[in-house]
Amino acid sequence: MLYNLLQYTDEWLDSIGLFSVLQVLYQLEFRAFFAVLFSFLIVLVFGKPTIRWLIKQKVGDQPEFYHSDVNELMASKAATPTMGGILICSSIFLTIALFADLRNSYVHLSLIVLGWLAVVGGFDDWLKLTSATRKPGSREGLYAWEKLLFQLGIGAVAGFFLYRNTFDNDVAHVLVLPLQRTYVPNAESLVLEEGVIVLGFAAFMIIATLLIAGTSNAVNLTDGMDGLAGGNMIVASMAMMALCFIAGDVQTAGYLLFPHVPGTGELMIVTGAMAGACLGFLWYNCAPAQVFMGDTGSLPLGGLLAFIAMAIRQEILLLVIGGVFFLEMFSVIVQVGYFKWTGGKRLLRCSPIHHHYHLGGWSEQQVVTRFWVLSVVCAMIALVSVKLR
Image 1 (cartoon, rainbow, N blue to C red):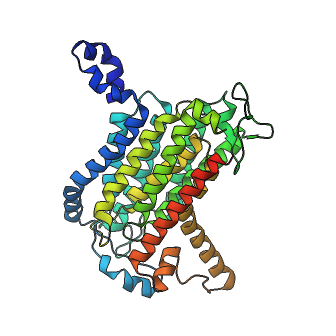
Image 2: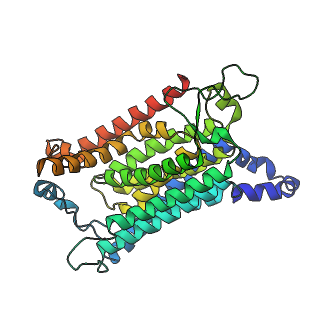
Image 3: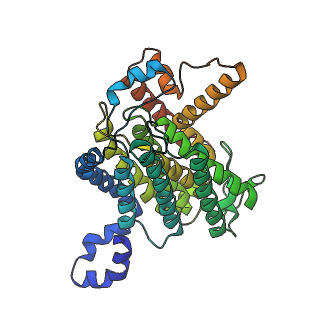
């Protein structure tokens, strides 16, 4: 909004001597990093009032796991307010509205993904954590198939509009494989490398749908310890911000032989808002947590991360950047599959895998910090691989 207002009023601002001060808003990099700071401050300022309101609404967590030892370890978290994702999503929405180019179609889609999954997650949390639960005495919110249906739905919607908006641009449909060059090196113009895979509509839709739903669930599964999901999301968002800068800048993309998708540079504002909101949330979510993000925060954060990766054509790098998230999801899939295959045996002490290490003797702070370290390493591997094309 501020960026668009500046464009419409630049002559008037120049006449009164203010344009020289505000023209910095034309710089995408400034707006992106200021989005980090602004989003952080919003969460920091409104954190305490929001926590008090959640406590008043009696939206408190009652951790229940299919493992008595984990329940014992997590007993101290009882009654901690959740649905803190309201803080995160509100901050992201306001920051995008203020600093992004509101005429950009990628910005529109990011707001839709954010709002859709925040509503689904919020409704699920509300059912689980208040008297509105479907079964008295239970913590059951939306059924698994209902939640998955909404996640797949927004994945399909986002995939459809991403493809439609770039219908005549093959680069925006390229499947970038590890270390693969998108363009012919030293070409006078951006010419696609021979052998590059260009996805058709059906393949693009399938990948978008599954990736957005899957990443949304992966982040949700990671949200099980104080600061775990938020800290990893900060790292992933900042790494994705760098990739958005490359994808949105034709010269940088050409130099690194990276897919250039016009307009995706504005997604730097979205990733910056995500990083800042999670950074502010970590202030209240670090051990011992005063609030949890719940599905209200984890579902839209994961969905947004995947949507951005689809927009800039970096689905494979997302699997690396979000390595911790996908490790958590994979651990659950393997545990459930092994349990059913063996008729009741467990491969891990408990899943998701952060509980496996917690039961193995690591303190909660050790698990969280080491997973943060892994997330930083994954992000660095992904960014280094960009130069190795």
